[in-house]
Structure formats: structure tokens, C-alpha cells
Image (cartoon, rainbow, N blue to C red; front, side, top):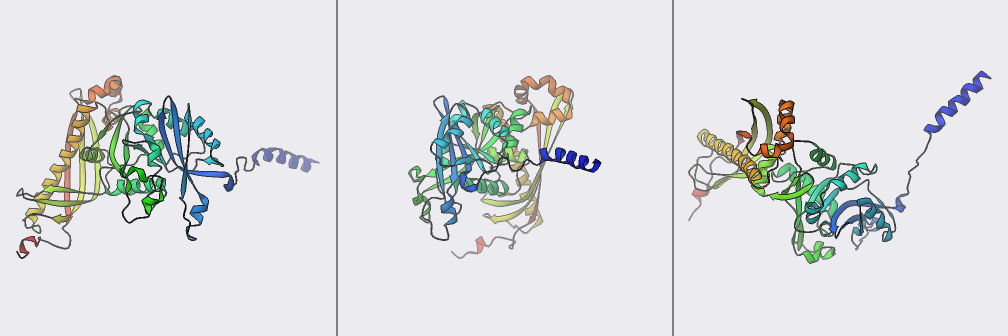
Length: 401
């Protein structure tokens, strides 16, 4: 009797845990969304869902001739109202667990702000926050998701992979995921920065397989420039050099390539950055904050277009000094440009001050962006050139006339 009672109690305790797959859906009932675009349409939100076409993906080896993705669009007063409305045209329920990129149209980001959309996605349990966020520059998000591209002919995968590679090898671009973006919007002392994407070439080729049927695509997707946000609204863009300076300050640069002037002023030397790291330190001096930025780079000489003995230690030291000056100039110009044009702290200097002296930052938190304009920032760079390639001196001067 006692044994039976124990067994019964065990069943009672365990049964609630055996809920099974309560949210199970068959794959043939789902439309897998890889890209999500958000645009403004009047006073409503227009969402564009880039959905995989399973038959075309699976039939590539068999010579599938259709497009690998399709796009569904709908409008609503909120993000998820519009997403639910997609079922009016989609034969399948939209599944959002595999979203790779979220793209905001520039008009929407400027006028409406992006917070409501980001919060809605963070609340949705099926959406993982590791997607990349981008801004469609001078165009709509729907048009970016409409363009088929070579190599990765699924636009969302192309954008994700391209930005991921570019951020690791090219200083003007950076990645930001959904959870990082929310953190930047909610944390005092820093404003968000998001990489832009634009369509280069013939816009009429979007949505057509003609764009991937030739060696040179008529239209391309290009990640370009960094967009500046104040709170959750887009207020402007950084150019290439300003974007480089920003990424060096934020320790986002892993490797890149840049040019420095030759010591004699004639020609340039291309320097390839192999490794880069940045340290930021804040301190209070006589009641005033100061932020010190130190960048360390290890580089190699990629090409030489000037008359100099590149193999000598004197030449190496001169190139290291030129590289250091170039790095400090990039960072200083980026900070000064943002101060002059946008008046917002996108570099996280406020965060550094907070970590050093929380009481000081709390005192100035409400007007920190104004305080940022006169903040004392000290720039330091240390460059080491470890390799000059397989050649010492350039043989350009030895070419026969």
C-alpha cells in the first residue's frame, strides 16, 4: 500500500513536467524568414519578409530556375500586427527564429525611431537576438531585400556574410546585433551607430534573376558608412574616414588596410594592419573629466609607391611615425566632426566616466551630450611594422624607360 502511494505521488509530480512539444510545427507549414525589412507607409508600418522557397533551394542540383526567395509585404499599426497580416498572402505561417538581418528604411529610422520595433522583437520568444541590424541608405528596406546577388543569391545571407567579413577586414564597417543595439539605446553615456547598406547600379534589376545571370551584376548591395542615432532616431551619417576613426576608438578594428604619405612627400605606402587593439581610460583632473585613448597596431608593408629604402630601419621608423600620426588624425577628426555636426556621444566616453566616477557622471548625466562637446580627449597611437613583404626596396626605379 505504501509503495503504491509513493508511485502515485511520483506520477502526480512528474506529469506536469511531461508537456511534450506544445509549440511543434511541421516544416511544410512554415515559411522560414531570413530577412526582415521595416519601412514607413503613411502612419503605418510596412514590413517586408524575405522567405526561403524550399523547392528552389532543394532543386539547385537539379537545375532549379526560379528565385531562391520570395518577399511578402503587409502593413499594420505595429510590427507584429503587420507580420500577422502577412498570412493574407503567404500560404504558410511566418517563422522568425532564423532571421539573419533586420533592415530599417532610412525614412522610417529618421521619422519614427526604431525602439518600438526593437522592443517588440526582444519580447518575441521565437526571435533570437543575434541578427545584424542595418539601415537602408537613400532607399527602402524592401528594395534592399528585393535584390538578388551572385555567390549568395539569398540577399539576407549575403548581407549577413558580407557585413561579417567586412567588419573583420575593413575598418569603416562594423556589426551590431539586436541585443547590442538595445543595450546602446538604454545605456546612458552612449548613442547607437549602425552600418548602412545601399543599392549601387541599376535599381530596375531588383527582384529579377537577370542580376545574377551575368558576370558583372548590374546592381549590387554595398555596406557603406555608419549611421548615427540620437536615442532611437537616425540623425546623420559618418563618412569613410570618420567611420574608421569611430571603429578605432571603439576597439572594433581587427584588420584593415590604409595609406600613409611617403616621408619625402612623393607617393604613398600602403600599410596592412594585422592586429589592432584600443584601450580607453577616463580620469578626473581638477574636477574635470579626461578620456585617454591608446591604439596599438601591428602592421606590414603591403605596397610602396615612392623612392625610399624600405628595407632600412630608418625607413621603418619613419613609416611607423606616419602610421601613428594617421591613426591619431582619424580619431580626432571623427570626434570633432560628431561634436560639430551631431552633438551626441557615440563613442561611449560617458560610460568610461561613469565607470571611473559614478557620482560625477550622475551629476552631469542629463546634459552629458552638451558636456561631451568640451570633453578633454587625449589620443595616443603605437604602431609596429613587423614585415615588409617578400621584397625590401621597390624596383620601380629600375624599370627601363
